Image 1 (cartoon, rainbow, N blue to C red):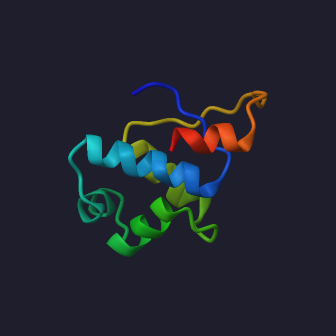
Image 2 (tube, rainbow, N blue to C red):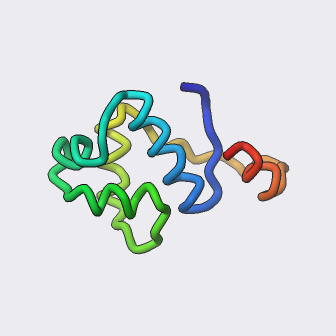
Length: 84
């Protein structure tokens, strides 16, 4: 998987969904790995802002992903949205 940019909760959720599907996991099986309900995984992938940071970090770890923080690139939000 190449580096991907997310500037919104929805974009981050789409990245997680894509990674989960590439690994052949269902929302339920991913949730089972990190002791969460399928509905919680669904909310995370939908970009709902009420998801806890710990939940996000556990999902990233289960998908063998990491969060990288760097200075913001100059692309507009619309440019980033076109990726999805």
